[in-house]
Image (cartoon, rainbow, N blue to C red; front, side, top):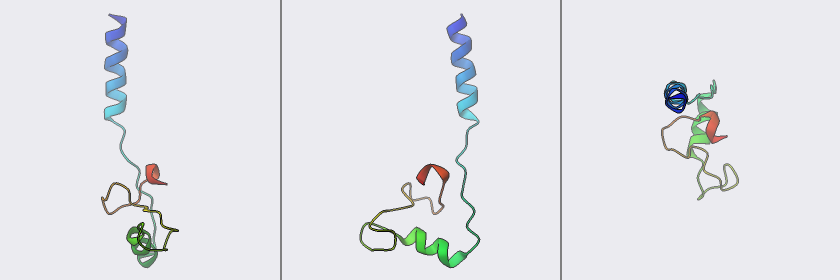
Length: 61
């Protein structure tokens, strides 16, 4: 029974977790970061927006 309560508690905690989007006030800089890919040298051949959602999240840094 105790395992069930811990499982339920864990599911409730993880269901409330959301990705945190990094606020970049400069629109031009943000568009350059989003355009970075393995084909250009904007970010040393690293793709920044790894999940392709058009935002930069803390988990992608």
